[in-house]
Structures are given as C-alpha cells and as structure tokens.
Image (tube, rainbow, N blue to C red; front, top):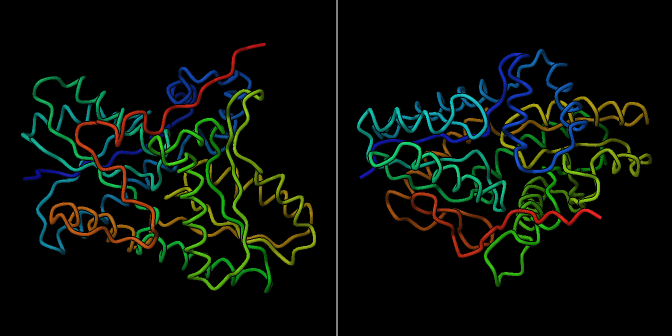
Length: 343
C-alpha cells in the first residue's frame, strides 16, 4: 500500500537574500573555499538571485499529477528539497500530518554515486529522524539513467540542437564533475567503482546511438572543491578549446534533468561565450524536464515498483538505488569523497 509520491530535489534560491544561505547549505562540510562561494553567488545574482529549479520542479510535478490521473492512480504528490525551501523535513512533517504512512520517493537525479544517489538516501533518513515516530515509510525509486523514455527525450533534444548548427558538428555530453575519489567509490564494493562516470558514459552512448552519431565526447562541468583535490576532467570550457576546427558544437547536459542555474550559467553563458569567441557555432540541447515523456517515465517507475515488474532499461547495468527509509544499496556503497590531508 502506497499513499503518496514525494518529489525530492536539490532546491534553489528564489531571491537575492537567499543565495548565500542556500550555498552555505549546499557546501556545508565540504571545504569549499569562500572565494568559490563568492564566484557562484555572483552567478546567481546575475539572474536576480533566482534559480529556475523550483519553478521547473513545480511544472514537472504538475505534469506528473496529470499523468497519474490519466492512468487512474490516486496518489498525491508532495515536493521537498535537500538544500532550500520547501525543505524535505518540513514536507515530510506535512505528509505525516496528512496521514501518509508509506510513500515512494522520486529523486531528480538519474545516476548512482554519492551526490547523485546516496545523499538522497541520507536526506530520507534525516527527514524521517526529524519527524520522529510518526514519519511515513519512504521507498526511493531506482536510478533511471537508462530508462527508454529518458533516453528518447534526451535524444530528441539532441536532434533539435543538431538542426541549429552545421552538419558534422561535434556532439559533447556534459555532467556535473565530482572528486575523482568519489567517482572511484561510487557503486557497491567489489564492482570496481566508477559507477557514476560509467553510467554517464553509458547514457551518452545510448543517446548517441539513438541519434545515429558514432563519435562523441563526455566532459564535465561545475566543479567546486579546493584546487588541490582532483575532480573528473576535462572541463567543458577546456574541451571547447580543443574543438577549434569543428564546424560546430552541440552540447547535451545529460547529467541534468532540468535547466537549473548550473546549466544556464556554465553552458548557456560561459560555454556559449567561449565557442563564440572561437567563432564556433554552438547549440545546447534541452534537458528532459519539460518533455511529456519525463512525466510518463516518473509514473512508469511508480507503476513498475507497485507491480514489482521487470525494470524498463536499455543497459546491462544492474537496477539500483531503490531502498527503504534511507538504507544503503550495499554496505559502504557510494562513499563520499575523501579529502586529502593538508600539506
């Protein structure tokens, strides 16, 4: 018996005064230098201190509610965030007051890894501890990077972007960089690690195959840690420098499900400006958040879980990420990054 669906996301500021407190929530305990916070704060203030992420989440939730109704599923949808209002702890308290006893959780991240998956398990456990004895049971839905509807939506967005630049333009997939140590630790022990970067590469391969592109690049963006800590590379801006002979560039932010600030700043602003400075035509593919198939996928994941059906997926990766009340997929799965000792 499931009473509700909880849409769990990252969160973002909705005014200039909220930017710094939001960033401090995001980076707490991670050793991010103050000058990096100043830099990212300036990015938000460039857009009036407002991230589009909450609006985009609300639009997606509206689409999911409509899709649930279309399929005859009577499930209320609640919205909570990790880092900003509505905070997941507050949302879960509301759910408990409404009489919800067991809910499914859809996190707005398609992949494995600490930030992409395990941290959502931690969010669930923290929120339940905050509410206490009356907290609903929460079942996190599985990772969906290889779901047919996700891949189809991203592939169509890539096709539309390719139509805006000359034939033969280079296809470049981007995802949020993470510390190399976090990527090595992603996945259960014994699997060999690197689940996050391997899943990104597999999603990129599936999209490129669907589009009919044989050669493409996978690069990274939005690193934020101290310079002494190695992160996944190359960075998108450095990579654009190597494409000066390309007839054009198409960038697909495959690591993201919506056009939040790290997409509109890092890609639509910085990457687009770098390409323009080099005289290279540039197009950025849309994220899938607004595609009707994204809402269809979310509801399909709900139905898949309720029916205990075989997962709909296009890769050989094992289905992962679905657990109860914030328990880990496996002991020591997706450990957080280990910061090196200061010299």
